[in-house]
Each structure stands twice: as structure tokens, then as C-alpha cells.
Length: 361
Image: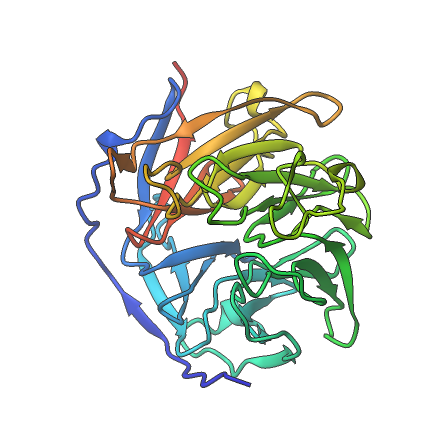
């Protein structure tokens, strides 16, 4: 097991960097500000019971704790509570403990909010995940109390048993089962606030051209469903290598095809009451941005509007401006709806956490 944990309690009081917020475009009435800066390679977020915002990183190998001690909606401290972890992208909070993904392992930091300045040694919940490509993981607890953990495809396109799936483990790590198959690489999922169904983003395969295939927004109302990879992409396109003899009709189609290669990551239903009513229980997606494309797309937060049956009726930008021509100065990763209805957005390129609010027209 690759672990090498070094526990720290490094707090920084910092001046906010010059972020060109005026370049970001939002719908009328919305405002975006910097909640925290100096959060290098900020990836996925979770909120503790006492208001601490925990942030994982991928390349830095660190886990941060952000504290807004004076209640002005800006973090006063960025505390590094662990470092030298193995791509700790995902974080989840439950029963006073912080859960962290570290590729092969899931770690747990008990009673963490009482010990930000003296972090405990992590408990290894499990170390049974493979160390392969797409090994970094978003994690979250489902309504059933189990921790959901993806196991990405160990390649761009291949057919290997035990990969390209979403698993779930019991909180004690003793039980593990596969929930969904045919999922190339999901780095963001959530549950519908009314139905309890799992929804997730999926990164489509590369090397099929600029416009093929689309990345996806998917819904898994029950266990045991297959979403097509590596045989079928975007619900209607057989893979040129693995699709022979297959039919896309045999797999679950996306709720919405997203842009090709936009790299959708974090996804959240808006459950607050600050934004206007038309945003309630609608899907927000952080699109990290393309690399396998001659002209970049993505680098934005999008909104998928659903009808009462959960069918997509619209897919459009909600925040854009991080991409200017072929130059990008930010890459959204994850979203977090706060108790006051504001929404946080992490940006691993800028090392920034943004706060989005609605002020009215």
C-alpha cells in the first residue's frame, strides 16, 4: 500500500490573490466572489458539521481544512491537515469523521473538526482498490449509508473485468459490492434530493476525434445497471474497436449528452433556497475542460434543467469565462451547496474556492 502519511497542522492567513472575477459571466442577479485562496490544486469538497470545508487535492497529495472563523463568508485559515497522500482527490464527511480517497485506500480521520491543529492518525478503512490509470476517486455517502467509490477504466479504451464501475462499501470497510458497470470514469456523483436516485457524470473516451464521443450525465435508479462502456458511447455510438456485435439498445442511455471532451467532474442538485425557484432540484455540473480536442471547450459550470419526470429539457452554461480563446486561467472541479443557499466552486488550476450567491435583479 502506498500511503506515506505525514500529518501537519499548517494554517495560513493570507491576502486574496488578484482573480479576474470580472471575466466570469453568470445569469443576471448572480454574484461570484473568492471564498478561499491558496488552496493549491483544490479538487473535491465536503462540509463538516461545524462548518469546516475540507478539500482534497490530486497532484499536491494534501488535504486542506478551510475555516471562516469570523463569519464574513471568506476563509480566514487554510489548514493543511495531511500531506504525502496518494492523490487524495475525494473527501466525504460522516459522524464527525473525514473520509479521504487515496487511490488504493480509503482513510478516515476521526473527530477531525476538534483536531484541526493536531490531526489524528488516519484509520485505513480499506486498501483493496487497484493502483491503475483513472485511479483517483471522488467519494460520497449515499442515502443507504454506504460509501460509493468509483473504479475507473485502467486505460483510454479497454475491456477489463473489475474496472469501469461504481462500487459501494460499508462504513467499516468489510463489505464491498458493485453498484453500476460500464462507467468509464466518473469523478462526480450525487443523489436526487427527492427520489434518492444516484446521478453521475462520465468522462467519454479519447481519440475518436474532436466531436466524438460526448461526455455524459447519467442516472442509476437501482443497482446492476450497465452504462455501455467500452461497447457503446453517448447512448447511440458503437465503439470502433469493442462495439462489434453489440447494440446500444442493451445499455442505459445518458440523461443528457454533454459536450465532447468537456471532462465533467463535480455534480450537485441545487437544494438551497437562495437561488430563484427555477433552479431548485436542477443539476449543476463542473466541466473541467478538454485536452483531447483541437479547440478547447468546457472550463465552465453548466446547468441541466430537468422536468418532473427527470428528463433533461435544457443544457446551458451557468458560469463561463475561465476559457479565453485557447487560453484558460481556471478549471472548475467540484460544487458544494452551503446551508445559506450559496454554492462553492473549486478550481484546481487557480487554487481557489469561489462562492456564488444570488442578490436579485
